[in-house]
Image (cartoon, rainbow, N blue to C red; front, side, top):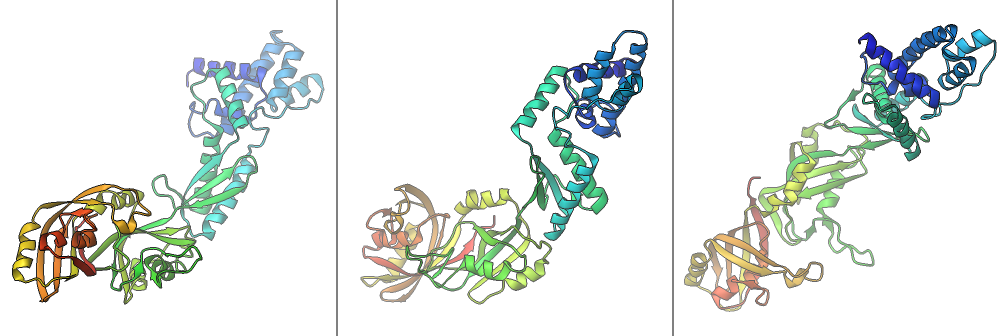
Length: 433
């Protein structure tokens, strides 16, 4: 740092202290980008030491008087207050810092770091970030001081607290700051100095299989609180994983969802498992997969996931192609020629579907266009056949079969010339995504 630069810093600090009482932390922070390997407290104290030397010399030369020294000493504190007392033999009451009210101290940072580390260890979180909530009036006072000084080298009180507390958590307690994927965020309330943790969820990539029917995705209840279906995927994942992670809740984010009475077989359906507020994080994937083995429901996880992946699964991925198997019954008998006609017709065929009547009460009227790429059939009896349907995700397969009173067109019922009913529906494959 050049002599001129140092002189400019001291001169600017003097102008600040003529107007505002500032502690070492808050003065040093106005020059935070000047010099390295120093804390703001050290920087602020060093500036006051130089200013002390400058003003003592100026007082001896008659440039400044007693009243001026008194004002600076009140606003600056030590060592200028000690200088004033030494020269004039008068004790003075130091004014509290205009920005922080003398709240900031090394001892405070030590206490905050100790409490934060204790909370992090309680929830087995070893990678963290620090956040600080600062009241508006403190922020406005800080802006006022920085604007008055015209400095380009200052930093915020929020940044200082985050850095100093985070540095201590690392050095004293061995926990690692992580700006990309923290396990928890330490949130410090500047006003009350209370600390709370925001525990980031765990996200796992996987697939699930549903081998039973009448299993809902989430818990369905009537207005009276009566469950409509005996079990749900949500309950399965909560039953298997909630306790082992000591979590509040397990949420699943799937790429679409099958009907309650449909099974999810074959390749399984892609999903992300979200573990909300886990107090224990380090569960081996092999153990998770063992816990997720079941007869009617089973799942497999194979790595960590992300919010971006959830958005993709619920968005573009839900439209990926799928393979269905449906058992169909018809009012009139059908023969092999009828089934061949279906196979020939439904090749790269666009299907137009208004919102199905069965869900119109909870979804708005909307025209959906999807494609059926191929249909393969197998006759099982005069009025019964099986159909494999390869189509776009989001196609209402049941409506493709029965036509939904003309709201889905073309439909299998329309092409056969007789009413067809889907008896059983299975999802066999979801396109790799």
